[in-house]
Length: 307
Image (cartoon, rainbow, N blue to C red; front, side, top):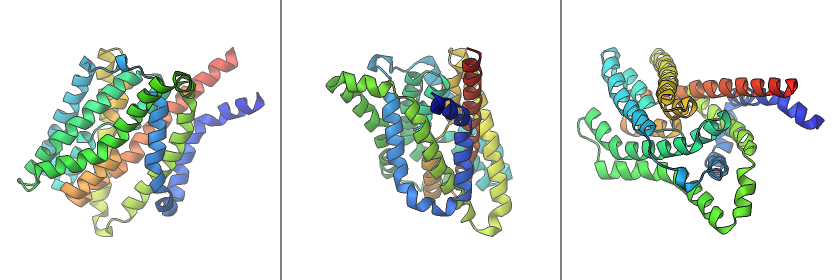
């Protein structure tokens, strides 16, 4: 019992601690980076075990968030274009890129609707896989091969989202008892997420520090703009979610981004310096997530202390 009380007390500090360790030990992240996809797969598998197939459906919130994602990317790009192509692309990719694969995990931890978020995550990633070649072709003057681009993006997006969902649904059919046991172990996702956060933040720091020194003023500007985009998307998603009775799923759906995919897309199809935007977004969005989880754990600790 004492062990559980101690764990509850330090839990709010685990995610900020993971981020700090990632910053301090960023030089060693190359050794751990190959484990990240497996950690995300396990997290999603645990989270998906609590979802019933009948709950996975597109809703009004799905379409509203998709509209904000796609139209928002276009508005941001053209609004910032007068300030420089690199800045406009860095901001645009932070809005255009799809929902993070780990977003359902954080949504579940915060008490939002996981099925709603999974439905939007699938729709968001499919939309980007189909529309990204058109978007990048327009930006680059038609120099992007549509079929090849769509294939490459789909290969990076779908396995990590679809595979854990298929495995969770298969386990529900094959062994309902094992499925129920895993569904009741949602707290495991929190600690796996802490390890993932340690790796992702470390890699983001290493990535930014490897950029050429001459680009530092532009990179700082892009990083600050990414912070504004992060705040606006969490706020906008929360407002959209409130209209459909789920502020948490709305905020996480629009605000939490697949930054690894965004960095790859920026390096492959846009000005490489624009990739600093999603790299900085990693720190911004995970600061928001850490604060949300910190205050949630604090509230729960107070309730338990009162009871």
